[in-house]
Image (tube, rainbow, N blue to C red; front, side, top):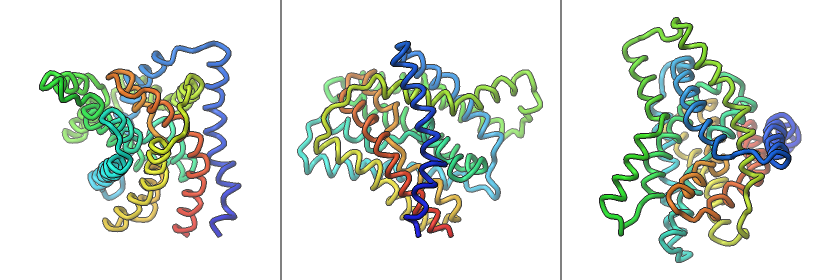
Length: 314
């Protein structure tokens, strides 16, 4: 039954993502766009605006935000545990193990996962996905950043540098600001001169982020697909959804909420993992290759995952 859904799911959900990202790919090949500027616009402007607006604008019926974030974070950390075990089996050195873990743990829940969820389950699913996105963003610039910047030779200076970089990430302050506004019951939406610009930036994120993803793919020269890279992709695209499924069943999530968490647990490797590798001297070739191959392969794995989820949901 699930197999009969595959063609329509690809056409209705995955193909629109491919088209918009493909436009970014073509634009970069013609005009050689500045990827660093596009990434900074995403990270420092549109993603924080989106997080702040969606946290205030899409509360979940009956709550459950904390459990969603806990499940998303647990999935991320368990993928890290699997990555560590695989790294030991493959006898990866320190730099390779860090790259392997970043590729396995950090999923593209923003410029891929968000439009994917909306196309797959409708606009209402953004009320769940935004908390997954917040968890991934905060985890990226805390756990991921410390992992990327971990250097035993650097001692406390290395960790201080990681902490400073973490505190410079506006996504963290967007979450904090939204939490304060909700806690104090501040009606930010009524402040039109502030809310409308933030809302416009939030609405612009999806298309702009997909274009950025296309530019990223255009400028990526992937490394050969060998055992360490293939194992990282398997964890990200296949094992991640399995872990998420087990956790959501254990925590008794409603099927519609669980489906969002499971689907985005199999999102391709986040562009931010390559950004972290670039910023902190990691294995940049491994990181960019994981983004490249996982994004292409996700067209297959996400289509299959979504078909199974729709069959499971009835």
